Length: 140
Image (cartoon, rainbow, N blue to C red; front, top):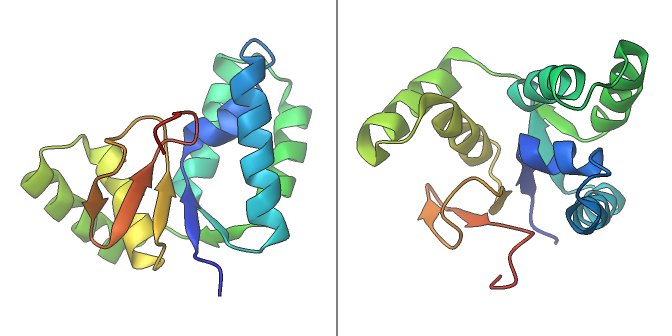
């Protein structure tokens, strides 16, 4: 059985960033594979962050963002709950991470993901049974 994998916001952003063609291709390939195998997981936090970045930094029109969100919603979507917030607070205190990164890690952990794909965290580290992997790094 393929392992479940959590997708951080930066993967979705790179998939829409033509100014980074290599990372865009890598992000699109990863998302395609996770969609094809039905193993990709995202959270409502990731969708919110993507929408904000897509509008503010990528300059995408709201209709384009809406269309992308409809596609991303085909992945399993974890709703941020009080339990996830409490777990994130624990991770924040123990690991001394920013709260929002802790929330991503908590979501991946509670969703029983084996891998968290992110460019922003320590590749190779395992937290709560979830291995952090930078899909843009050649050291994976």
